[in-house]
Length: 334
Image (tube, rainbow, N blue to C red; front, side, top):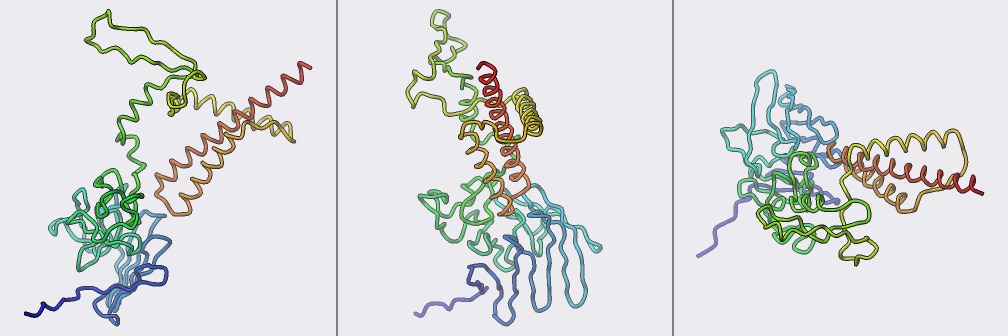
């Protein structure tokens, strides 16, 4: 008995950079794809041409030309860039998705963009993530091919899982390793244990060696907290987390930074610098911000990187101002 013949539904063409540049059943009737940085920008077919307009990664509008008629559609998306509504002269459509990005036929079907602002294949319904690097099936909630970073790297132990099986708090534009959505940091606690650990970290150079008493414990079992200098603790016992920065701390950093800028403007020349660790932290935060801008990261991630950079800059200036004051004090003493 002979094996049944395979039916080819789709052919995919890649360029030397391993980007998906052609989709279609026949090579002469395929659709060409063009990208703007890491995002699909234009599709050119035999009958239909589509162009998407973005602000960085945020889709704003779509223009489609067919048989000499051009139609422009406004796109309404959420923070994850998933398409929720389209507005045009002819119609108004709304879209809905499951947590993993599947949307039933009755919820409407986008002719281009969809879940997380990605474009799905018209025949299979799969999403070619990372410029066609891997195909994601939202119905089966998994990738169709294994992750090359699994199981010992960012891909995780499950080589076919999408976003570590947490598509609400993560997204995966590259198809290789998921990222945490930074705009949910003020709403969702990603690791509750880490938050509890931060609340128990003491300030200055002391640490408590006794846990807080249980509410229903007898009074005789309650012991006072004993504080040991940090210098007497072993390396493994020292706190690894830094205390939470309060509003007063932020205000003091800003004031010290302004004092530093005023001093530099009034006293040009060489001045004492703070310890190198503050300069290293400033360079690291600046590098993270530039890296996020270069890869066209979401605005929320860039803003978070910018906040970290500004805090590192203010800390650097505050420590520099402290070094300047100490130097001036030593000069007056002599």
